[in-house]
Image (cartoon, rainbow, N blue to C red; front, side, top):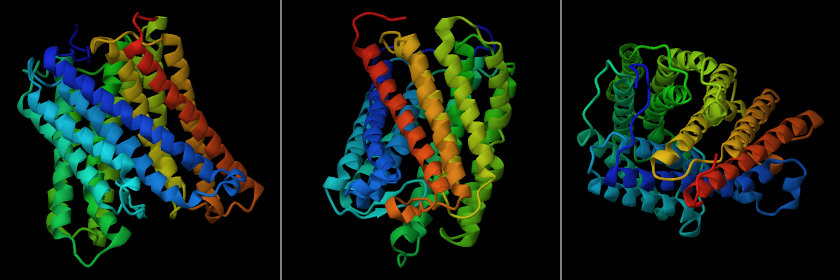
Length: 453
């Protein structure tokens, strides 16, 4: 292992079993989100949506899809990465945290059948206003927060900033600290919010601050994934470990503004909204841009061995989607589907990186090597379909199609608008096929009695 090798060892014993549990929860979240997204895509496609009677439940399906595919998937994978920070033999408290989080995820999934169907499409954590959903959400976040705190307290000895692994572990720890800060920000917001607010206004104010803070966790962890994928595919990033650690520190520093914004403003006030938006706008890419460039240069000189093809592909697709999502963010004007085009690029960027890292981690977690050819095809389907989906949304946004609508509410009265949303739906369906294939490949790697190449 060289100083520029940005990989982490897989712990053994109970810590490894705990990591497997978090991986299974992450995969479960994608199964649930994939089933729900099929309903969403059909509800948005022209002509077809007129033939089905259930488009009224579009918003309910969208709430569950977003929470499973973003919140539960990302934070469950963060739980998996947190396990890599545990000392050998650690895991009992982590197992309890996993059980609490898994119970919460199940309640979120089935909450539409356990209470009122009252969806609110606020940003970051859209909600169903029923008791089962909120109990599930609280349990899931408590489990993830407990796992993060446990991984920070019962951590492995650091390799130091002179080693790539040490710098990577520092990035992981900063991501977990930011995650805890985001949870505290939500608690803080809840305690000070005006009780007279209700509906989407209340939930928008509640989740705004912590939601923005949580994006810094996702950014820190996707940088960890980029550097790891680059190293694992033979392209050592041309960053010294000390510079890398400094970039992680730089990426975490903006979060220090969160308590100041809470001290100065009440959640929901214009200053509060603008402050956190600017925090993400000006601070979110500080570490990601140079780290992403270093990962791209490493990708160009990665080992051409065909065995590393899925890792190389996951890395470049993630970098491209991250860049596309960032550029589209500057094109946002008004409340239209350009907004989801922007954040879908960023979200899928993280997902693709985690998919590639999953393929790499499965053998180390005690499972078989995933089928390399099918893994490559899956990444092309998911990443390529997502790019079409993002392009279709951006095009639709330029045509004025509003976000969070379905059926006739979209106003698809022209052929151009129908073509734009048709591209959106087609790209989304291709991405869904790629997502399903990812789950199949993982299942076969876990269940097949022999290794595949």
